[in-house]
Image (cartoon, rainbow over all chains, first blue to last red):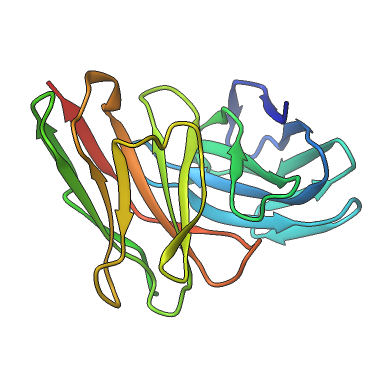
Amino acid sequence: EDQVTQSPEALRLQEGESSSLNCSYTVSGLRGLFWYRQDPGKGPEFLFTLYSAGEEKEKERLKATLTKKESFLHITAPKPEDSATYLCAVQAGTSYDKVIFGPGTSLSVIP
Amino acid sequence: EPEVTQTPSHQVTQMGQEVILRCVPISNHLYFYWYRQILGQKVEFLVSFYNNEISEKSEIFDDQFSVERPDGSNFTLKIRSTKLEDSAMYFCASGYDLGREAFFGQGTRLTVV
């Protein structure tokens, strides 16, 4: 069965303290991996798409990387406004439509 | 910046009643989706819609659910006879190409009492 897990479940960082979030997946034939940010009571906001191992994408303080079994979201010098839940989602197998979401990592950045 | 809009933001309904959740996807997008998120749980895929028909649906999307694109701009999710366990945040999303990222609306919080 296709599965997506994320760690840690929650992370508290001091402002400026860099760290990484992990997304591990066991799926049959990865087609794409997506990172989203979700603020409380809001819809997921798209951040990155990765398609193949070795691929990297960057946006401001965020950098996403992909290997054959996991993806990392690196946060460099975070600010309080980076506080949110970060969701990983994968598209796999024969489906181009169905996306499986992980449970998310809740990030709190303390000033 | 174009965005997906959903109405209403919050709907309270009695068990057994029909509800229709409405969405206006981004205008040049061709692929439309509904997801749901029960409080404190994962975002779950419900259904995808392309070229005026369902292209894929999950086990959650049973006969009580239906989707429609009644005109060129709206996309709706109907739940015929709501149950308590249908209480969740429902997200509409749209995408411009198959296999690419989807853009989500702000959600409709459905509360079944």
